[in-house]
Length: 320
Image (cartoon, rainbow, N blue to C red; front, top):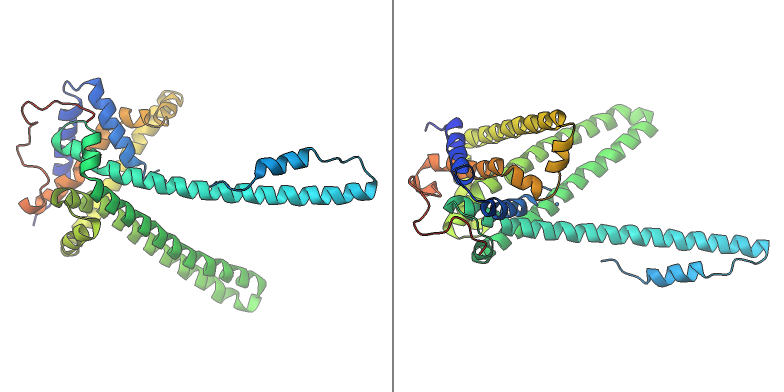
């Protein structure tokens, strides 16, 4: 089967151009950009204790005592500050973890809102958010489990590698064996990292469109998609490399823009949501590229019909 890479890109760009660059309203850009921003949160991703009371007790403490008492109080003060610092770090860690989980959930739900808008050439938030709640939650659980497994594997490789390096430094007789073991673990980590990156990429580009089309969860969509990926694994890997090349080209263009504007362009694009709206044609093209590539394998993989002009009488943009 002849599979192209430039042709799907051309069709995806034509869809993006037709949606955004041919009389689209500002409302369309803002609403569609919001769903794209939600979907991109995946790429970006409990403070307890009575600390106020502890701080007050430390602040109001009477330090005007004898020298020995001062030393004891200073030691106590250091312990209190140390415990407070550890508590703050632990609280910030828990907060960061909860924030990452929240962003993953929002991104998973937003993924289907953005895809639905690209499919139907419109800009809505509320209606697809509710309609694809089950698919979005399924994708969220998959991503959460994927992160946990990937993190556990990373720790399982990093910790033995660090111990091997320390052993090689401390014990001269085992230096060669320790270095060789650390290098082997590093190479295994690179292989597993590439495999994880491919699984994540194929989930976004192939599995999510199948979930959208069939109304299924992520596991059912993977069961349907995996045989196709296995049969055409070379083409699936080349498509990932093709997308990586495109992202590098876009990155170079953004870098040139930042240099040409004395970094002002970078600062503007770094503003959350606004940068997504400005680069919306790029994100719409990227979202349409996976379904366009997948459609080359037959009508059963096609997400939209060949003649998919906007439905008559349907508004071009509506938040609900």
